[in-house]
Length: 462
Ligand SMILES: *Cc1c(COP(=O)(O)O)cnc(C)c1O
Image (cartoon, rainbow, N blue to C red):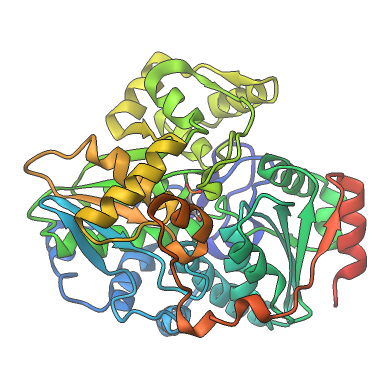
């Protein structure tokens, strides 16, 4: 399988190369040159298999040029061994036709662990074989950073620097990033918002001298390996609800468009997904765009679902690539327009997008109200991101198609919002109950490319 850039001007790479590179050198994102299909019988055969076995069958065609079968099976086994739930991604029923896919049983209590734990193991095996080391730099609105630090801590071939917006992540998120003591992981509190962090990471990748000097690698959701890992739970959940004999819909609390794009890949592979619903909070650029209003940046408004507080949604470029018939040139042109503030989507591409995605928005008040009402109707305590999903899902449920809403984080990760909404305190799972007592290690730093690059050069341990 070859990987190509969404902007059409970067060399084709293998899976391993695309994974280690992150952002393509033309500024684009890597996607597989073709999406492998799974037949009806192959999907039916997934029924009842352990999560790890489904993961192997779904992902194998994408990685088979880079890893041996045995290697990849062991990588998967190690990646998910630290999850607390035997099913890894259990489904709960909320109401007659509405299910919650719990993606928060990994080490940092958010769905990012599914991809990050896998990528940590993939990097380790690939770098060992190449006798190389890399510097991973990532921007986070909270959950990616903690998942990356947790996945890479103690791996000697990797240094990790995580940029997060100072003062704009929850205390649990911050502590998960600042309390690991391993000297190859570093939390940087940037004076700016998440879009600033994301922009500085992109700048570093576009500074080729720096990129080569520190052997920069990215594990943000632009990394296709991340998207790939997230395809798996669309299969496990749909199959347990009757696919491929029956259609299933999904609603996904969305920020950077990585998780929902994984659903698009699952659908392209042959999983009978009826609707893919993009749920946004008050930062609703995606909802506006999918409603035909163009893609124009505004100000990021801090919300109680901070992991979705973005204006520029990096994986949306991948959706555009498919909507524009897998042509790099129009995507590259749109991304140039975006630098000036935004763009309108062509009529043909808009048609393609609306055949694939529908969308909805959830305000702050609606998020709080949903946490409260869901607790009293189903007994389920939602995190604010999951609540955004549930609210929007409820607007799109059809009588004959099960709807699955992705619960992207554990409520204990966002205790302030949950308490405000429902007047209950969500306790941390016992394995991390001493999080508030562990010492923190963090560097507060300017939103300035040169300052950041200098710090990273000097701090790399090896
Ligand atoms: C990252 C994140 C999201 C958004 O996911 P994307 O793949 O960026 O769209 C939603 N909820 C939580 C809890 C997250 O951590």
